[in-house]
Each structure stands twice: as C-alpha cells, then as structure tokens.
Length: 132
Length: 135
Image 1: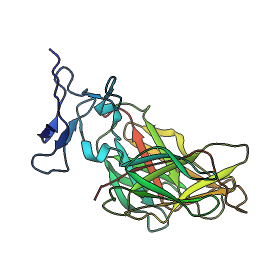
Image 2: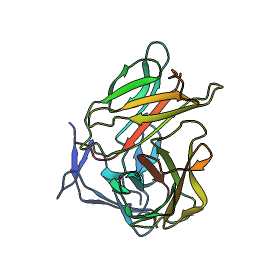
Image 3: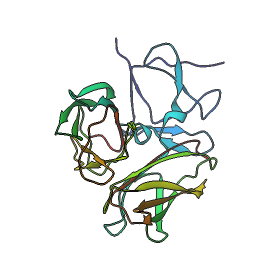
C-alpha cells in the first residue's frame, strides 16, 4: 500500500541540516547537499525585473551587462558551485560569474571580442552548496 | 498548524529509491530522488587544482591542459547522467567553451574540457552540477 506523509518542515534528527536519502539504486545521497540553494530567471534589459526565483532577495543593475543578485538566506561560504546562462539574441556572448560572496554574486555578460558588456533579456543562474 | 518531521533517513516504502513530493502548484508531484543533484564541484585549476568545495566527489585527475577527470565517491547508476559545466574564463571570451568529453561520461564520473581561442586552456573556477540516477 502506498504511504503518504503530510509535513510542512523536514529537519535532521541527529544533525538538523543533514538527512540521508535512499538513491535510485543501492547507494544513498544527502538531501541538503542535493537541493539547489538558489535559482533565478530575470530580465536583464532596461529595468531589471525578476521573473521567478528561489532564495533571491533582489538583483542590482551594475551597468550594461553587469548584475549583482543577492540572497535572502546567505550561503555558508564563498566556495559554492554556480551555473549561468542567457538567451541567444543573434550575437555571440559569454557570460560568467565574478566575485562570488556568501550574500551575493556578480554576473557579467561580455560580447565575443571582449569589447563591451551587453544586456540580455533572459539571464538564468543557479547555485549548489552549503547554506549558512 | 505547521508540522515538523525530524528524521535522519528517508526511504521510499513501495520503492526504496523513489519518493513523490507534491509540487509548488499543490496538485502534481515531482520525484525527490530525481530532483536531487548527485554531484557538484567548485574547482580551481589555476590554484594548484584546489577543490574549493564539492559533494560526492572523491578525486580530480589532471589529464593535461584544460582536461580534468572527476571521480565520484558513490557511482552513478548509468553513464547517461546530465552534468552541467561552466567556468571562469581567463584569456579570451572569443571561441571559449566548456564541455564534457564524449568518452568522459561514465558511471564513475566525468571528464571536462575547456577551450579558449580554439586551444585547450586551464580555466579559472570550474563548476559542475550533475543530475541522474545513483548506483
């Protein structure tokens, strides 16, 4: 018979922030380490606006092609792992993260020959790591 | 009243490795195990190949300029897992790319490749997130 658990909050019993999950095969994984800690989809052109997000308190416009998203709940260290991407609007661009801190990170979108920064309509970012 | 569950391990009852979780829309469900990232790294090739932080990563092997092999602590269940890779570019944004080598995705890990200006290059901070089935 299928069982169902109704619960609003899950916390580790021995260690509050660590719960073991049985994986798809025989190995186990860790719930907290496997959960994405922030994700963001925002409009990086003209007036910055967040379309949807998790654990993002706001995005600061640092000028053409440069943005600083901040977290609602900070990360536990500045060594977390991030992924970033943008839409393709007909010109080759590179996007990278620079200055990764516990409370925010900086995204830069640069055109292919590094001559200038460039705003994008769709900017997406996510992060894995330890919450504070 | 909000309820709180204190537990150390969660295992599916019908299928040990499959637990359904109600989604944000309160109607459809997603799968807990399938939604968890199984391996992630923050790796710094230009700083003595320092592994800044990671999860489920046992070791990193330097395979030559721009090439690194990441070995899992707990293996993946198959070789068709989905690693996403990115990095901090060092010399030029032109013709730069990060990739998983076609032969480098195995149950034991994955092999990354970074190129700038059509040449293999050791990148700055390299990040990788992997989703898929654990062994």
